[in-house]
Length: 437
Image (tube, rainbow, N blue to C red; front, side, top):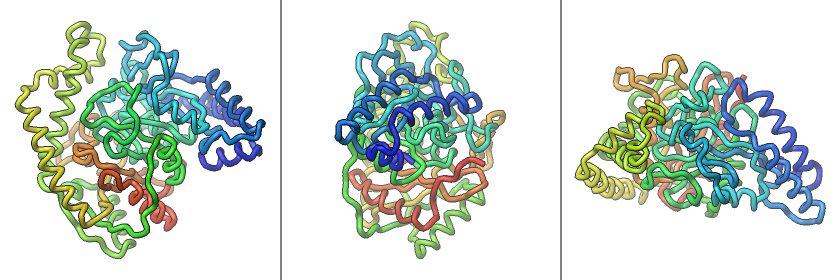
């Protein structure tokens, strides 16, 4: 969709202004039921669209995303607006003096910013249930969660309001909502895309990335943001077992088995001590997040969402030796996983073990116990961001059913192999976006 819009605008068959106007109208018509948008930036969108049309009229090329409307999670700086990071206490924060670097790069590529998008407060959660800005509903079933913390970014694309959005991923905050909303999402190798002007949560794990309905559009956005790499002719693939095969819904296990057969039968490999890696990532997240927000927790604790405040306070009280032990284990875990990438280019794993939970029953089942979705939907994504691996979340092709998603996992710097496999699987009809019924 994004690529087609850009081609039409560059060729003069469509104006960027008409695309922006239609997008604004579509958001006004649809978002009341979804709750993805926190601010509609109509004036800015029309101004940017006119600038794109002026370049086309002068015979220039506005860029690979010419006239493509997009939105950003409400933790990217947008010049002249407070960056809320999903927190009521930041509604009146000083306005950003400049756009985030990622927003500047999107504009340079010709994209048109239309909206800021809902999220869990301070990006701490996998649900996008926000006490200040509301709950984002899953477009495939409005009674279900969209996932988080980039739930608004995912739902805006899945509902057809926007063809591209940007989110952030610390422990799975792009991949979880991509899976639950049936989209493609990219968590790049840690540190490979610009974080300037993005409200931080956990420096050890924070990354930004796009959502899209096709792998071609995802790649366009990745490249516009600064991603680079040529295609891979031959991709060595394995399947992650152990931790990543436990607690899967039967329909997900069957779908991955079919994918395995489609690829000719895959070797199963395992990461060592994945449970410990997930626990260490949980601990580091809590400690860094708690330390970051400690001054405000001391100064005005009652202005936090209680669900966020309690977790941040617990993290702030963690003993330093625990944090240092988690950091030390990360290097051990990284070395063991890197050894696997000497033999394989892409590892396939589920993204979330089941379909989106209901909003009125926000729990998932792990080892026979019901646990809160807000904290545990990322149990399959968290061990991967613990060591900064790039991952494409890809929707299994399941028209007419609730979405389920895969993780295509690679070594840092080998995103090209992930895109190559995703392109092949999309061409084969194994993965792909299905519009909500």
